[in-house]
Image 1 (cartoon, helix red, strand yellow):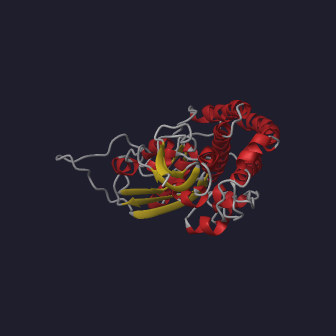
Image 2 (spheres, helix red, strand yellow; image 1 turned 45 degrees about the vertical axis):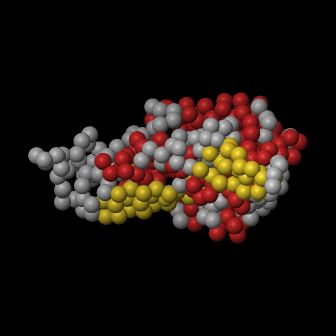
Image 3 (cartoon, helix red, strand yellow; image 1 turned 90 degrees about the horizontal axis):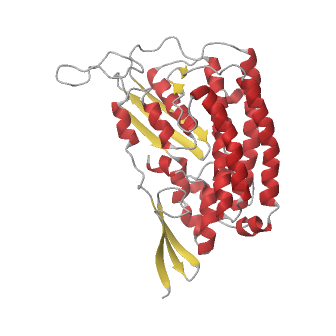
Length: 381
C-alpha cells in the first residue's frame, strides 16, 4: 500500500487560519480527508453568560474577524426577542446597510486571499486596496476598522456622520468598476480557469443533506437566501436578486460571490436613498435601565441579585457572508444572558469536505478550500 496521511496545518498557507486538514493520499490522489478544528476555541458562549447584553457585542466582532457587523446583528436580533425590545425603523435600515457593506468587505477579503491560492498576485493587491475604502467608511461611523461594537440592544450606537451617504455612493461607484476588473483578471486568466473549473464539485443534494449554506449552496444552483426566504430587519423592503450558479465547482462559488457584491451595492443604494429622506432616532427609548451597565449588581455574598425583569427566549438566523448563522439567547430575568448558543455556517461547510475533496489531487487542495471561504474564529468560537 502506498497510502499515507499528511497534515496540512495547523500552520499552513492553505488554511487561512489556525486549523488542520489531515489528508490521506495515494501518490498525489486524495482518498480521504479529516478536518481538525478547535485550535482557536476561546469559550465565547460561556463568557457571554457573565457579560451584560451589550458587553457580549465585543465578543461578536471577534467571532468572525471579517464579518463582525453581521455577527453583531445576529446576536442583537436574538437578544431583542428575548428582552422584548423594539428597534426604531432608521436603526433597522442602518443595520441592513452595515450588513451589506460587511458582505462586500468580507467577499473582497476572500477574493484577495483566494486568488493567491491559484497563483495570481495582482488581484490580491487590487482587492486589499478596494477593501480599504469600505473600512474607511466603517471607521467614519464606528471608530474601528475590524472590531466595531456598533450595534446595541434596541438599535445602534450612533447615527451616520454628515456627508456619509454621498461618500458611500462614491465608494460604490468605484467598486462596481473594480468588479468588472476582477472578472477580467480571473475569468480571463487561463491559469485561473484551469485550476478552478470542474474542481471541488459539491452537488445540490449533497450540500442540502450536509447542511451547507451560503455561496457554496447557491453555487450548486440552489436559490436559498434568508434575506429572501425569511426576511429580517427591512430586507423585505429592498429589491435584490439571489446570486446562483449551476456548475457547483470552485468557479461557481467565485461567480456567486462576485454577483452577491453587485447585489449588495444595489441594496445599499436603496438604503442610502431612504436614509436621506427619513431622519429619526437610532436607539429605542424604552430600555431596561441596567442594560449596558458596566457591572452587574451583587449581593453581600457576591451572587448576582435577581431582578423581576421579563423573561424570554430569542432565536435569530441571518445570511452572513459565509452562509446561514444562527443564535439562541435565553433571558432568565438577570442583567446578562442565561445561555447563548451560536451556529456557524463555516463549520458545516468544512465538515462536508469529504464530498468535495476526495478524488482530486494534493495541488487542488488550496483552490478548493479557498473557495469555501473559511473563518476559523466563528467555527471554534
